[in-house]
Length: 206
Length: 231
Image 1 (spheres, rainbow over the protein chains, first blue to last red):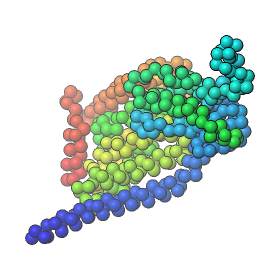
Image 2: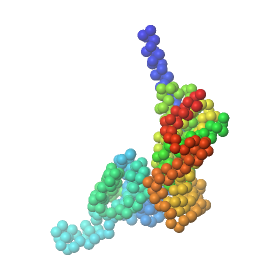
Image 3: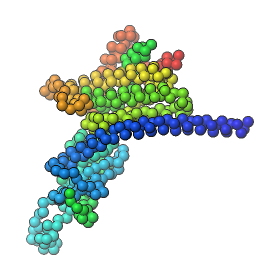
Image 4: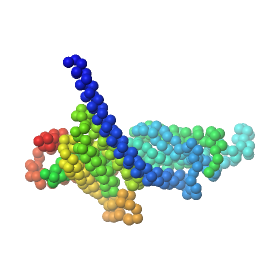
């Protein structure tokens, strides 16, 4: 009697697990078939949306496709585009950031003497002297609370276009969406940090 | 029999104005007619596919693991709806994707699976799903239309996102929004409350119920449906 009960119990567990596995398999097949059917149009739509996003960020049409090296694209006009992710409130937030060099400012004579700056150094300006613009490519932040980072829903991020590091670092906390706002801030500051790296400077432009 | 299942699911047991189910996406997305139509189509697709699948698989699903199985099936069809929307209505997807993804948690769909589809043959489950989907669509579209007209002064704006580009559907009915708050989240609650009250009043008049009688809760209604459907 005692040896029969465990057998019955384990067969019941196996039956339930088998049913779940079978339904999981069927669901997986449905998803694979749908993915096969929609993969092409989705890729086309995403490419078009990305193209519009870069055009919007650069404020000029792109005459040729961007060349990406591990999420970084250096344009011959001096700008650098970066794809990056930061953890948000709901899940990761995918950003694209544009660093644009600021116009070289001539140092005052006093400043030049104090800091030992000269004309050649002035042309090789520090990357973090430029401005950073951000756009959110993908997010699942709470609608109506954290989705202010989505440029399609709010002007909050576009109004910060080409802001310097100090502006991004000094953003006021947004009540109720602190984590989302901090993700935005971290992404902008990460762009400033990335563009100073020598390997980024060494990338071929395209 | 078939028409009574459909009528009950659409009107007398309407998921929105009688059972008050699926209110989160209903209130959040019903800002325009086009958004409402998009969510109604996505919810309808998930409901039809999930109810039919669950009815077909009902003898295979063990009683004690039925809820994980239902959620797995509903999540699959929600993902299918999201993929289809992203592939063929990308602009609309960009606007309402977040609300399409949370269809998986919509109690209306899980409720119909648990109360009806898991106990009924495929034909009846399909009819119930169709009726529920039409009822939910009706509530969404009426609310979306009212909010768009009062909150934006237009009707059918952005409908080209759903029905294809090249045709301008937008009708401008007012130069300025007559009641802009209706387009905002607080206005959604007010407009939905008034519309649901109107629907209840019409429903009460049609069925001859005594006014002032306390309304049944959604749990009471679900139990009532369960008893009817089992017997």
